[in-house]
Image (cartoon, rainbow, N blue to C red; front, side, top):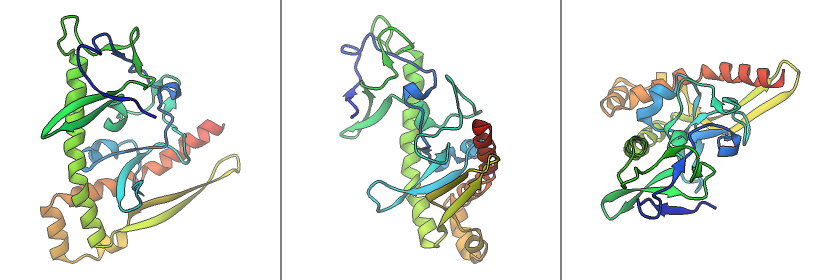
Length: 233
């Protein structure tokens, strides 16, 4: 279980954060949540798909890193082998939380990234924020704002019945079979069949670009399969 604490320069004055990548730092994950403002960067490297939220009542967009739980085909030792690192991965071990209307930075003290001897310093010796913490805080704010855009996009997709479940069966070069299930994508036929008024409404709301970014990202499944084959070689 995470051990979440409100970050402060008294109790946490000596904390450091390890920014190297790797399974031992929690990076062996199949997917990470993303949001419309990040789609352009994400689609350059990863497939963007939708999965049911943990409460089962809605959906959330995710960047896909592998075909099964705890598989990340972009991990190469202590290096993340992609040009872009999704913000929900990069921001760890920090989180953002509210105190009334004020947003505050929190930290998971039990994260394997938290150290007192290794990594980036969080606070300067006199107590001020380091550049690293300032960058992390800006990232958390961008995530917070970005996630607020997601419900409107999902509502539009559901209104026009554009989400559909899919199954991806992959046969690797060694003959092994892999199946990806439990995810949804955008139905291109239904999108193409939308009337002019519906398309214009999606454009005015800023959703059309996000939709096309999701569709463009699906070409990365071929690259993901190539990575899978290379891992099994």
